[in-house]
Image (cartoon, rainbow, N blue to C red; front, side, top):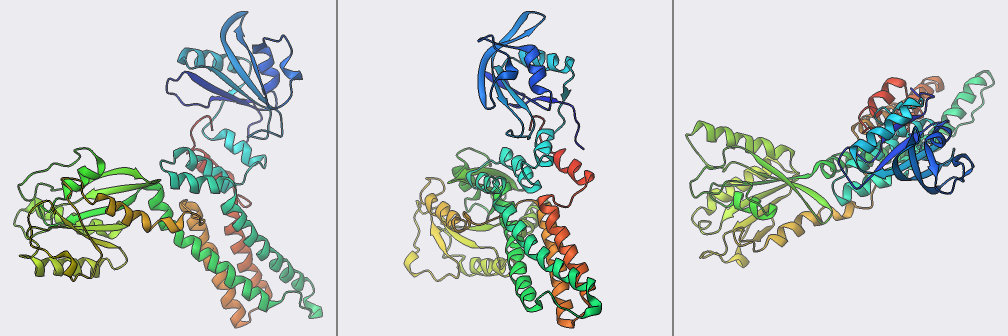
Length: 458
């Protein structure tokens, strides 16, 4: 997996910018750079200290290509653990291309996707879950997903997994030792303490597993379905929240025939709002398909906003309450907020006396009155999770599920008082699954799959 060549790539992205950064890593990166970079001080680059920045010129056959700043990082104190050079040049694509070509002519190889971070992992600068967090950090689009990725990159998640693995490994070693002295009938492992440890480990694993669904919606946008009867103001609400005309607004019932989605970031969280087809009885086949999609979409959202046209609520009160009860029955775990819309228009509702099972707010989507209450409602349900360890990676989720299964096998084995060699096998399987998360147990195919998804230059 690890090439011995020095590698090079544009680290600042392909877009035009005033400044670009080119990264070179490998044993010979400083020596090769010394042949192409000439310090203004006239000194040799090789003699310079690590973590220093130098002004100079990149030259090709005596001709100046660009005046640049070069930063030198000497092994092992660099991102990759190898000698590393970072060149800050002017952002011209021509300059970028020519500098990279100069280094390639000197024997430096173009970096593959994720190869710098792969080298950091192989050289022990970070474990595998931290390496994956680098990619997540680059792609994070809101404050909370950034916070989760940063915590994981700093080793918050890794330290929890490694502690579990160390405790399990100690007991596995004692059981293995008992097997070596089986003829002497000695016991090194305290099985009661092992059982206590298994309960604690399983509880932590379960908490991490449960956090995956939360982490997934935070990473991809928290889905919020806006539903209700035709002309209740769903599209107007979507447009008001997004501050743009995303959905068509019309007085004609059934205008929205398909699902419309868009994402907005508020108070550090991304919310994916979904405008759905109006729910009503209809003979229109296309509209029926849209309504069917609405009910299907409710199975995968984090919130449901049920909009009511407050001007006709009293007239249709019974059917509206039945509809709300049906939705709650079908989606019991999804919070439903009743939203009385169009309060800017005349209505006879006495809101203080409304008897409804779900929480409700009153708004005017058209005049943007009360929207702050909707936002506060959504934010409040997520604020308690901000400091917890949350997993967002499906590979980690799968490994934790497998580890949980093996832990349960060990617990069953202890109850049945099966032989130590069989308990040891299940413990080793649990250790392997936990080790897959941090990269203590891995293979080239897994690494190739993970790092191929990284951008080039990272």
